[in-house]
Length: 535
Image (tube, rainbow, N blue to C red; front, side, top):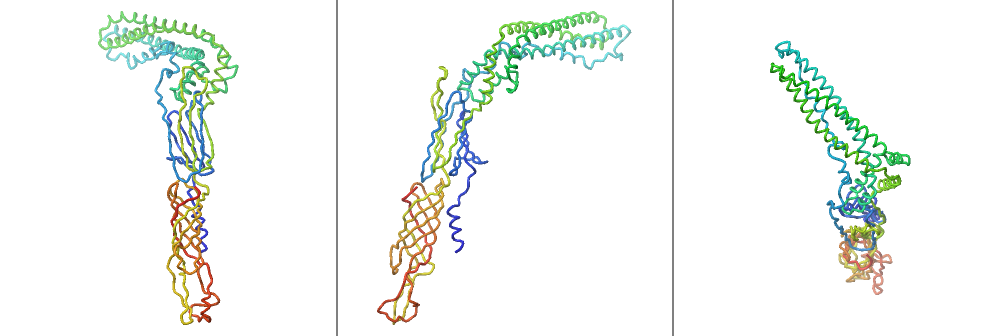
């Protein structure tokens, strides 16, 4: 019997523990929700009483919407949870959802600002593997002389191709600098307005808004970390217009070199032509054809590249003239915008504490005031949750019918021939019982707790049997009207011999009756009841 109190306490207060708090993540772009407790992802939200509920709204365009969260906490005796999440329209690209660089297509093209393709580098390897040795090639001294001439032409040709390749490398290097400067100035001119359009475009996700805005701003500030963008840096960007003129002169110089190398290859082609008539050996003719084919290919491609380079040069001149010097104040404003976008994580956090049995959260998105006139949005419910709470001591009452039995069967006493005799009473007794229940709240259809109650015998056939007291664990089943199954220890007064008499003793004065007294005796019981009080 010493272990009985510990067993009762264990049954009363046992409940599986939750991890600390509940975190709810709502994706504003899709409407999807995720519930996390500790390291576990839950299928449905639930939380322990007194623990925090943290709601995180992610991918939330705070340029368009304001958040409204309605919180309702209430007591309840039944478990009900639901999730009503409205779905957000897809991210199909709308009229305002184009790339941040659409306006650059006038200047940019797949081959680069200057339209250069790597011509010379491809031709340098054309003659690889050819040998001008004398084994089996020349039939006489004259053809040996021809071979030496072609070998000299090859050396000159490779030298010109190498210089030509260097010119192309120089042009490509200039191209990268010019593209960076021209694009930065073009973006600077339109960045503020375009970023504003991105922020207020309901068809773009916040990831797209941040990515496209960052692309604009990185081009303006040449991928410089925000911590290094001070007034001196902004002033240097403001002065970049002069560098474009320097690059323009460098392009003009390299274009002249390009044309010069093309002219040198034309002279090599003219020098090669008379040699063909003197060749008689098929092997020597094969070498000649390789060299001639390479030179002609270089001339053909070179003419096309020169024409494209001339057009690109004129386009570059026009782009520089149209870019203008820019406004220093615009750069300052863009710097502020850069800092703001970098720090904007497009999230919202709401925190509350689970105090009652049910915590209901309703999340709404309301359009901000003073949006551009072309942006038409309406309020909408994003999600709603009914979060059941576990924990906290609940108390209610119930009435029902119980059945009890004493550990030692009660006895009825009588006298025969002045001798006190006894007979056993019924094995068990039915009771009309009422209970007071106490249990930790669980958001389930099944809960465990403890009960204390009193009962009155339904058929009091036993002499002077008093009301009984009940104590034991209970199982609660159901919703608003719970059925309770209780079992445990009962205690009640039963009649016992007094004045020192025992069964079998001779009663001295039978006329005075058998001397008895009421004594408490323990037993056990089982009852079924339904609650009527509390929640």
